[in-house]
Image (cartoon, rainbow, N blue to C red; front, side, top):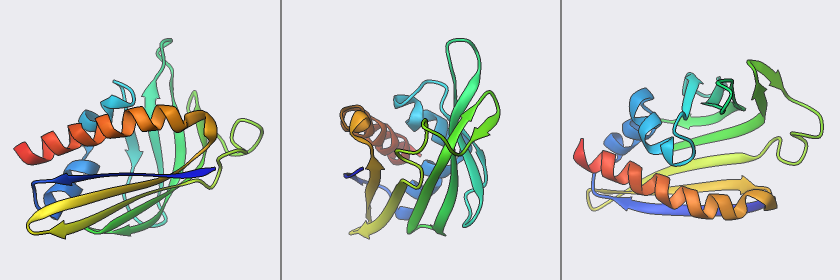
Length: 150
């Protein structure tokens, strides 16, 4: 696993960026950079299980099973990935998840002169580094645009 970091400065207050990043409808908008059907099911709260979902070409829902490891409103969110979701079934062990189970995805929000510095730190397996390096900046640009117009 390699730790990757992405950051962006957004001309909006931290509370606005935090709400935009994690709000149900706006989450779907900025994460469409990863998949047009990106969504989540669950609650953003420490200790809560959450699914990050998308629909495949066969119309089947799949995605990631995770736990919110830390949740400090308007400051910090840590997501611990536990496994995958296949046709509404959790897969938490075995070869498909063993390389990255326990990986963290952390969001840090810092106010600087009325703007928000959003920093995303993720643990990534080597096979996804190029994909994340291409897609995370696009997703953060979309989040910036949404946050600055709300």
